[in-house]
Length: 172
Image 1 (cartoon, rainbow, N blue to C red):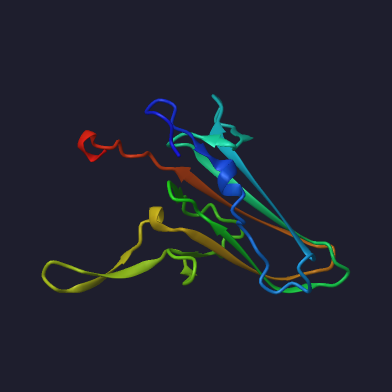
Image 2 (image 1 turned 30 degrees about the vertical axis):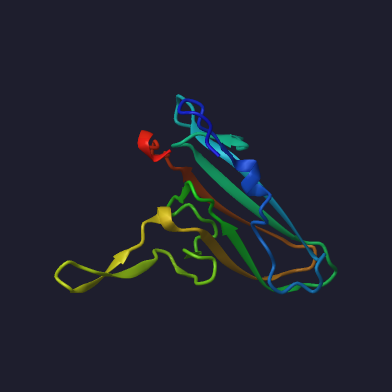
């Protein structure tokens, strides 16, 4: 996906098309409309946050994903869950999820509150619990719960485009 050593860009638009968020229990398939946007986040000279179109990003750039759920039906939707995949090549930035009560997953099947942890066996055979690096998180999930008729809810999270390791000349 990256092009050349100087012009490395990640087409965020492709990630947007992958179906980032879905309701689990809607009254019918057309009740909840999902709208996802990505914006590149930067600061100007005075330190003010600037949001720019996020269709392209370079390694080190921060991208904010914003997912808006709109219930277009005349009745409420129950047990709505928002899921946001984090593409390979991006890492979740801690404490940027809103609402702040968010779970993460390494595989899209098993979720737990952030920070994720795992058991690691040390060289001496002892097992210890360590935090999983956020660069390994592949999905975020929010339990939105009930969404009133004609109501809306938005979830957001920021990720950083990780630098790509140059390929060794002999690995081609």
